[in-house]
Image (cartoon, rainbow, N blue to C red; front, side, top):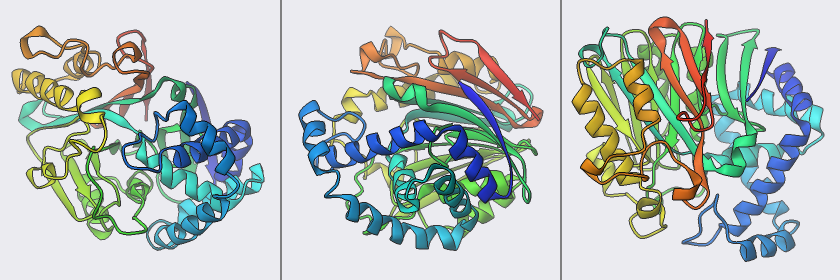
Length: 374
């Protein structure tokens, strides 16, 4: 996984990002536009389009240019209100890549539909030493793994943070700032029929890495931002508490744990959101084993509660299931041969108390971690 450092104003960091990844950004932009067109009808999976849908999309891509840019203009109004710094970063990217600014806004908002993942956290008496932990597997098409990059952001104003991104985007999959505040976020497989025409981007919340140093500050920031326009679960932890927010366009719930565990495998724990789960809309629930992963993580956490540490979390992110709960090969460490091409592209274990991240490039069962420490 490539690692780079960006520093300066947000505009300057955007320029540096564009210079480093110009070819990758252009390729990502083209591919995401194609997938947006190919996956626009009900029952199609955004990141697993059929070949004939992609061929048709190529013929339509110029026709859709106006649509992309009109959508981006409306997204821009929401971003300007809640996280204007990120617009400066996108402007810097546009300046150095010569890509239309609106196209970059559009692709960043659209890629939020990715991240089929597993995430979980523990705090207080649930852990061996009382310090919170977060872990996550980021699962996508195996072709996406080449895009994952680790970026150190050192803005002139605000906190220094290190996060893993899908190259060409500006929202972190997971990361940590200089105070140890840690974040991970993933998609929930929910029916979004009640979403508004223009949704609130979920990456607005990711300003916590730039602006917050505690769970209390993160909660205040989250409370000030309207619910994201797609189903999401977001985990934040400092050295004392774990915060989890699960939401969709019409409902959001924030839980702060002094003690306890929470887990999400694209399937919400929050009872009020479970009625929105996509059972028949796509094949994700049955075919990507969301319920199986969710159940398996919960079982392991329950067995280890009171003694959870980094080794416990590593055992979960590298887990391939068990006959005991009928999860063999349909579990947390995702391999493409079991899921028609979806695999674990990157994983992380976040230890806020130690200000340390363990990042795995690809399936954690096959790769050693790289440690990052503030």
